[in-house]
Length: 435
Image (tube, rainbow, N blue to C red; front, side):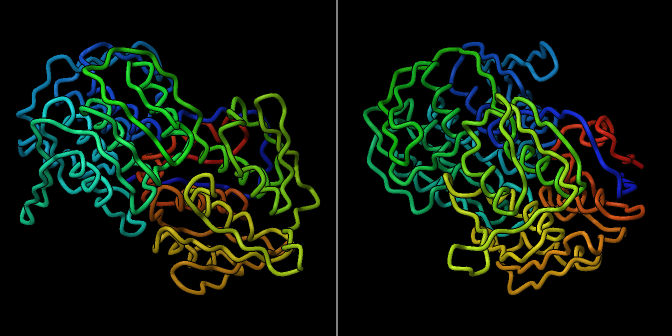
């Protein structure tokens, strides 16, 4: 297994372009199954999870052509539906959480959708109930094999209905929306997820001929249509990567420019970093982070109490960036409470930061208090293992700021979410190599 060898303590400088959004890509790629016509998608990130889904679609019979780096055409006009019940599919579908989103499109277009229990990050339980309860309300029959851990939904006809989701699940909302586009009648989804990536999916579907209103809100109305056509679509830059580079610049006292960030789709992300004392400047559609030579100071609440940063469904702060916030806080002036509400295992990399010299109190599986060093004591290099995608990059940022040479093992986790991260970091001066 490959590792990263990182010589920390160096200032970086330059411009870095964020990749296409991973979480958007998983939704958009599944949506190609809704139409027999050709669909062109741009800015697809070349990462493990996305490539796994592309390979799964290819085995399902989707005609795929790569036109350029990040640009592909997809045409699902002659699918091999027998693959869905094959041993190969039961194995292929396990390794990718996003594969669950093929179920809605297949159910809507072909009357059946199957999936093995998906894998993905070990960051806590992520229920599939929202997906299947929504599809059942549209008229599908649900079946589950406990022995094979294999899920299925089938329906002769889907019928529009009203539903109130128990949780604003992004992938659950995406699955239900895609199924509802071809249902008979009108579907109303309340407590729908409204993340920019879900908005992107809805806009793409509307260009294909769907009739979705309320895009950007938590109340979506979908008027079913007979069929959907082709389109072209360009994915947003990855907001999680953008936040990672903001944190990297602050931790290494580096001047960085993050280009083409689609500012209007970043929500409160820039302001959360500003609460840690980080200067985040808007330059057109770029973010400029000056070198924080005198450090950065965490704000308090207006009554003087300790700042708390917590995650929440959009437009709240994304849980994918809490690990970055936590690492950045280790060298700030002041203290902050990090409250990870949505997943119960995402703070379990904190022990590695403590071993590096960080002052962190892990209060429980959901909360950690960070007492910043103000650069008076740098983190020390060490050998560690990446537990998941986001924690892996947080540890990478910690290693780049630490004195000495660190090794990060299990970097396959990082490769699942970040495209050629070592090459791109070397281009701005990082001392990192893949071994």
